[in-house]
Image (spheres, helix red, strand yellow):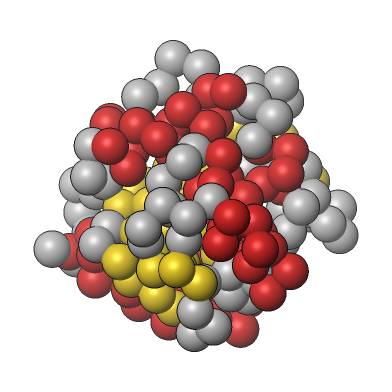
Length: 173
């Protein structure tokens, strides 16, 4: 159990991509991390694009991004809903400012742009939001996983093994 004592928050909202929440959640718990699903405070559970529910453990209001070791932002259309809640954006901004690991996959990059944490950073994402990231000042590349300091980004569910490998590596260091 290499991640015992580490706290990871996975952000959730409706229309999340199933694998992009559940794969990291289970993989990080398998490594011994304390993993919590964080919501905006508007609901006790959120449904995926296919209707699969995830229960919220913590609500963003009242949390500080400095109080976790990592934040994971899944994709699907959930990030477009997440960024409608200032407390969700604040958590990502605070975590980045506190030099915590911030990991985003697929459309999760929308939250990175809203939190203003990509300027001058090398990132990847689902190709459809490339322009959003570039306009926010990111250096976009098309690779399965990109690590720039404590910022980890990936493109799609098929990249989850590489994404989780780099997330676990970052949490170990």
